[in-house]
Structure formats: C-alpha cells, structure tokens
Amino acid sequence: MTTLAKGKINDRQNGGGIAALVVPVLLLLVAFPLLFIVLQAIFPDIGKGSLAEPFSLVGKTLSDERLITWTLNTLKLGTGVVLGAAFVGVPLGLLRGLFRMPGGALWDVIFTVPFAIPPYIAALGWIFSLQRRGYLEQLLGFNLGQFLFSYWGVVFVMTLNVFPVVYFAVSRSVASISGRYLEAARVCGASPRVGLTRILLPLTLPAIAASLLLVFAMSIEEFGTPAVLAARSGFLVLVTGIEQRLTDYPIDMPGASILSIILVLLAFAAFMGQNWLVNRRDSGTASGKPTRQEQMELGPYAPLAVGFFVLVALVGTILPIAGVLLTASTRTISGGLSLSNLSLDHFRMLGDNTAGALEALITSFTLGISAAVITGLIGVLTALVTVRQKTFLARILDFLSLIPNTIPGVVIAVGLILAWTQPWLPVTAYNTPWVLVFAYCGLLLPYPVRYATTAIRQLGTGMEDAARVFGARPITTIRRIVIPLIFPSMLAAMLLVFAVASRELVATILLAPLGTVTIATFIWSQFDQGSVGLGMAMSSVAILITLTVPALAALLTRGGKSRTS
Image (cartoon, rainbow, N blue to C red; front, side):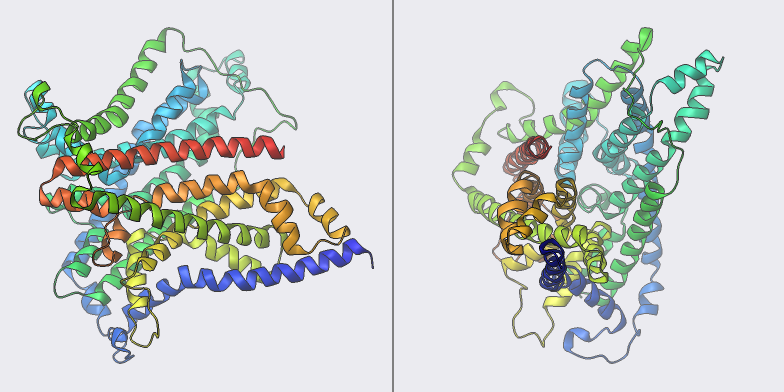
C-alpha cells in the first residue's frame, strides 16, 4: 500500500476523531437547548425534575385565544414585510443588474447599511424622527406618530431593514444573465414587455422567491422592532408573546416552550422553502463558457432611476442614522433642533463611564471576542470533516451546524434557560456570562462554518496529500497548512460573529445575569429610564462597530481569495 493511500486512511480515521470532538460541542450548543424546549412543552414540571402529567398544558396553551391572535399577527407581519421588501427590493435589483447605474458599486455599499444596523436601533431612530414633536414635526410641521406605532409602521421600518436581502439576490441573479438574451429577443421583434415577462422574470423568479422566503423568516424572528413599536399599539406577535410569558408574573415556561416550537416550525418551513427554491432545477443560461456581463444603458430614464435609488437611500439609510445621531447630539429632547441644544455631552458621558457605559462596552467586546474565537475554531473543525469526509457522522455534523439558521434568537434563549436550570445539573452556566457566550455561539455558528467550508473547498487536497507523503501528522497539516491558508476567511467570519454578538438584543435581555450589562441592554435600559440621549450615544457606537467590522471582514475575505488563487 502506498504512503498516500495510507495517509488517506489515516486522514479518514482522524476525521472521525475530529468529528467525535466537535459533535458533543454542537450537541451542547444547539441540540441541548432545543431538546429541553420540547421536553418542557411535554412535561410541565420537568424544571422540578418530574416527568408527571405529560402534555397536560399543551391543550390549555393551544386553546388560549391570544395564541391564535399572536400567530395570525406573526403571519400578517411576515407577509406585510415580504410584500414591502418585494415592492422596494425587486425594482432596485432589476435596475442594478440590468442597466449601467451611475455609481453602481456605491449603491451596493449604501444599501448594505440598513441591513447592518441593529433593527431595534433603527426603530429608535424612527421614533424620534416621526413621533409627536419629533424631528419631522419640528422641520415640516406634522408628524407620523400614529402611523409609526401601528402595524403598517412596523412593516415600514422592518421593510427598510431587510429589503437589501432581496436587492442583492435579484441584482446578482439578473447580472448573471447575459444581456444578449434580451438583445436577441428585441432583434427577433419581441417588445420590452415580452423580454421582461418571458425571459428575465422566469430566470430570476427562483432568486426572488428564495430571498422573499428568507425575508419572511427574518421578519417573524425579529424581536426588537415589534417590541419597540408594535407593543405600544397592542399588536403582539409570537416573539413578544414568548418574552411576555418569560418576564410577566407568573412565569409560564411550558407556554413559552410551546410558542417557541410554533415559531421554529414557521421559520423552518420558510427556510425549507428557500432551500428547495435554491436547489431545485431551474432554467439555465450556461453556454459552456463564461460570458461577459452586458448591461444596457438607461437612456432618458436615467434621472428617474437614479431618483428612485436616492429616495430609498435617503429613507432607508440616511434618515434612521440621522435620527440616532441627532438624538445623541442634543442636550435635551425638549430643546428641539437648535444650535444651542447641540452638544457632545452624551458622548462625553460614555467616556466618563456614566451608568456603567464603559463596563457595557468591555463586557460586549469580551463576550463577542469569546464567541468569535469559539465559533471560529468549531467552524474550521466542522468544515474539515464535512468537506473531506463523506460519512454519516459528517452529515450529522453538517446538519447540526446549519440548524441555527432556522432557530430564532428568542427560542435559543428559552432553550438555554430551560436546559441550564435543571435541578439535577451538578454545574450550571445559567446566571453566568457563559450562558450568553453559549447563546451567541448557538446563534452565529453558521457564519464561520460556511466561510471555512468555502475556503477549504477552494484549497483542494494537493498540499495536504503532499504533507502526508512526507510524513506530516494530520494535526500538523491542519496547523501548518490548512489554517494559514484559510485564515483570512476565518478571521472575516469571526469579525462578523463579533459584530453581531456585541450588539445582540433578545437573547441578551432574557439571559444576562444580574449586574451584567452589555451594549444592547444598556441602550434598552436607558431608553426605558428616559435617558434617551445617552442611549442613543451608545447606539451610535453600536452602529460604528456594525458598519466598520463587516467592511474589514470583506477586505480580509477579498485578500484571502487573492492569496489562495
């Protein structure tokens, strides 16, 4: 038997060893909390260590009139946001992909911003812009507070947060379709309407539908915007209903578990639909060789198209950020928009550690870095097994690493509460910072796994085979060859994990130990206590982190691609 063949056998054996190390970690982070959500829904007294009276509260919870209302409101909200995202994102994507838009790359950057801003911060910015005596009323003499604190207001704000998902999916799909197809249709006498309806839309329909299903899943999972806006008008959804059952006395853990299962099923159905649309057989345009992208000129419609882009950028990007910055830069809300009321006092208060601001920043950064390092290591090990091995254990590992994509943050939080408060546990992570690290890892693990998987697939196996021929052990191959080559992609994924974890809201609110304050809980508490300016100053820091870190991650990813090419 050759040295290379022996090396491949040893590699398979070591791959099984890596999987045996990673599977328990994924079971702890993902399966363990989900298992106890199901068990709590079935056995209402499991928190006391009892399996008595199974299913005794399921009927009571399902017959609650509020459950029907919350579920219908959740579906109504998701549907409304889908329609809004389609109305905004599809035309923008078609224009960007089909025509030579002036400043095309700049628009891509601008439309990344709404998706990057934490939704609850954007909602707070809209509150101070549109509410009674807000910035809109001070400037133009009227307000839209009644609209904002309603179902349509929530749909409006959430649409502006998620429409980039549709925009980028549609624009990339359209750009991949050579303009020669539409040109050939025109040469054959087809009108622009026929080219649009018979060629362009059928080819882009899978991308449109898949992105809208993703928008639906994101909308029904979102907690911050419904909690900030919809709760004031009594428009409650499943996520706010779960939070209510966990925070209002008496605490209803079985009810929260059942609501969590319903929410997971809705999100899972959306992701399964999205996955089916992405992977199903669709119309192809491949000719066997790459073709140059050919975009058309806008001609006399250029001002109209650019005006549409400017309007969406103004409403979706500039106004919410301006609302946050203005509120953070005014001494008092009642002082209004005047030069005498402008001040950097709230930013100075952050530096002076008012209300524990510096501790909140340090805590968020520490938790974010911890989650980034842990998920980065797990992501690399998971990707090595799933890419290099074709075993049943590898498929289980891949499945466990992707489950978090379908799990709302509030469900992860509920599962961790249930799992780590069991009386039989000798040691518990509950009421310690580790429970937040577990939550962030459970939610954000797919980022490093997907990044590492892509990078490892691009490497091939040549260098690893050569290392084995020369007698290198698998751990040496991973440490000296694989990790250095994929490090830029790893670091980019870890930076994204850090950016999201450092400002995560819903799991942090439900799980943060007493005395532990993060960026998200600091903003939330300052808003509740009426210290709006200080909360908005911290929001400005969160926005800065959120925009800077992904940009750095993109640069690192681009550098990594050029290095491995």
